[in-house]
Length: 532
Image (cartoon, rainbow, N blue to C red; front, side, top):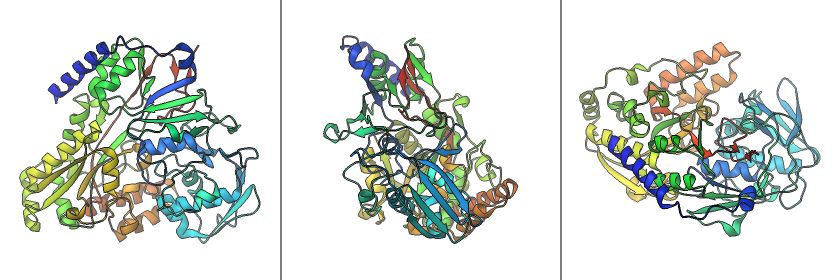
């Protein structure tokens, strides 16, 4: 790994030298255009089609939400002007702001919000819970709509205002009325930027233009997604550059303004540049997980899943991408990220005790599944995912599995990940997954803790006990009760193993000096501006 980092660093420096003669961006053009390297390609334009963060961020460029999250992750009005709660929490009446329009010039109406919520509820973990408690949702007039519930849903605003996995973006009724399983093929947004479909080049470029009629919320301070969304650039170009050395060279030469997720192997190269700033925007870190497919052998057997625990060394995974600097990563990570309210040591000894490969081999042999074939999805064009996947493959092979490294690009992986067929028919057995820590802080919104079978996130685990504990958490009367239930969830998690946590790491964005990022908590290219 040390050699790999050294080679990348040298390549980055060489790449930068090779681009010295490249023409600089014209000053007038640079003032109006931002060039941005996203963490991955925008493989689809419908943000309800995938939990890919690149697609999520694309969604925030094009659409707005009813509520946004401030710097403390508290929901604040965005498209909504406000709300009233009645009938002991069983009736919520929302009022939209007067003024915002879609990109076709039509006013945003309550009927659009109602249809958008209905479509979102099918996909999102919070939304599925809301759907189960819903009695009726209906528009009262053009600006007001009502949600009536069978049982209170205290996290309503957290759900409607969530920034990620999946945000409840407000779309025109004619698009939101499409089934969630039917991907959008056209964008008519409600947000600060228009999607320029004719300039999209799959695997290379996505372009946005400022929507001049966008009306920012008049309240709040820009946080994660709350507060006024201000489009300071007429045009944004997202350039997909999967090779880290090429990306670093483009940033150093001035061809690119922002690299969303700088590759850690190039930290020392970029840190030496006076015209480049390394910035910790994503404060909640990234949690790495290895998700097994619960529908097919061998990981349909919980004993097989538990057999992996003695072999799993989180530090091995973290060092493969972040090196030996422990300020950049954490091990000892359970099902809730360290530092969050529900993080605990309950059952964590299976991860923090001495690692014992022989014990893992023996546990696997006892299940009768030693030698079982395992197909692991591996995105070669995503450096961190790829490095983590190779460590996972090595671990599984040493345990006694026959592992197939299913190498593909990121877009192909996302398509195959949704395939429920057996691995021999195009399905899969395991995949490395990365989520921001804020997505995993509680069981209400944690995508990989849902264990509702065919309706669960990719991998489709089924655990009636985990689902019952999740419902208990949603009904908990206070924080202490939530913490007790959180401990019970982690204990059950270690038995059912919906996934294996591999650690948590912190990554910086890199940008040209003179740019003001504007928002913290999530690297969204909104409110970015050039400083005088």
